[in-house]
Image 1 (spheres, rainbow, N blue to C red):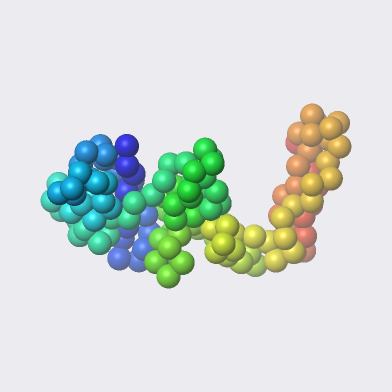
Image 2 (image 1 turned 45 degrees about the vertical axis):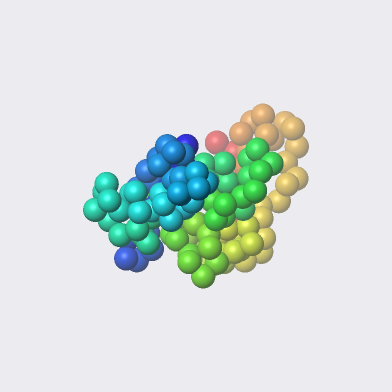
Length: 142
């Protein structure tokens, strides 16, 4: 199965469609993204160039099954298509965060949350949350 993101004029993902791989075969029987785009245009009345193939198994520019990652992340509804960097990424949650294009994800300006929780803290549900006001990671327990 092949997955294609339907994107808006503002490069926002509107929906994701699934195609049979056979709907992507070119004249030589080889899977070809442009054939899939043309198929989707014909059957969905949306321009071929606004259908971008995405991989169900790609997250943060890593393939879950040790394959080759495709376009940073699986394109979810509301994600952004970044043609210049050839990646999909989610909307920004915090004003201070910056886009890490090599990993196709947002990061805090001081890096990822600490990884110092004890086993007891983890069992208790303790985790870190970003505090935009202080620009720091706060430890919290439910």
